[in-house]
Image (cartoon, rainbow, N blue to C red; front, side, top):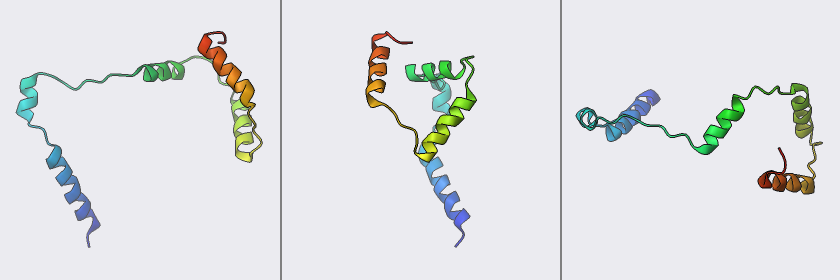
Length: 90
């Protein structure tokens, strides 16, 4: 059995089922649009931030997580989340 032929036939079927009439697209004069969510905008801002990352600290935490030694104080975490939501903590 030729697996590549089966994959190609499935791909061709999917393509034909989803094919769009080119003349319809040209006559509508609308192109594709993209809308970025607020979360996406925030993540882009964080990603493009110029803040320095303390790679030694990141590696230290990563090592502790992998070895099972990293512990989180759930009460302290909850307090920080509430402070952040209230705008009390940066």
